[in-house]
Image (cartoon, rainbow, N blue to C red):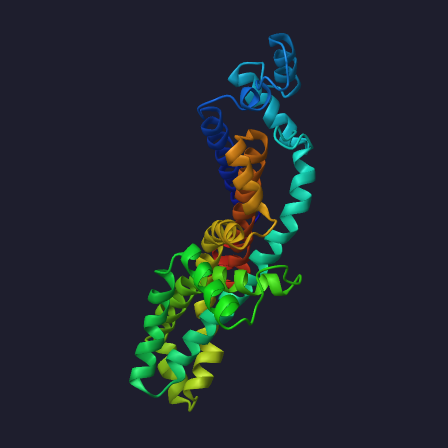
Length: 313
């Protein structure tokens, strides 16, 4: 068991290092010079020597390898550097933007899980064939809708047409209603698909026939036997979808003008603010890796067969 845990943690750290390294290489390969873009304007009146001092202050005067080692060490010590555009510590910008994104992502994922479970339950409890077919077609419909288009449609319908949710100076919670729906609906689609597929697969197993022979109703079979055996595949997909949820949150924040990681990313890309972009990539990768690590560590707890196998090994 200890070997399994250490192996999963090692794999998570390896993925996180790979994400950091790839993002560093790609950001260093960006065309143009962010320092020259910001400070070479005649309005600043800076000499080449002063530009060199600025480059040294931001750690951009060394070789690529030296910058890589310096950046790795800084990140390990909790120092994300300074924003070239804003002139403040990147950690200060993240402290302002990250809570909004985490709130949006958390509530969106919760709503997506509820929608997926509701679709699966209705598709299996309904006695009408047409209703089951309609419910099973909903996930495919949800997953094919682009996030940005869905957000624009929600604004058009609920804000401009029905005037139910304001988009201009909304309250703290009013401003999250439409973004949460925009992110949750596409994420609920693959979750519902995997739940429906696994329910159908579990219902064909012999122990389900035994339970029905003992007089268990369809609802009791679903709740007592099918739900537990469907949980593991759903957890796997849920962990993988977290990365997509973060990406959807970034796009949604841009559509709705939320002051989160998405808005910060947009401004950082426009200004080629490498320090901010590097920090955002690492934090997003860390969130994705952490969620999947938690799912991996939950497997032995939820599946006694895996726990017994690991204990035997």
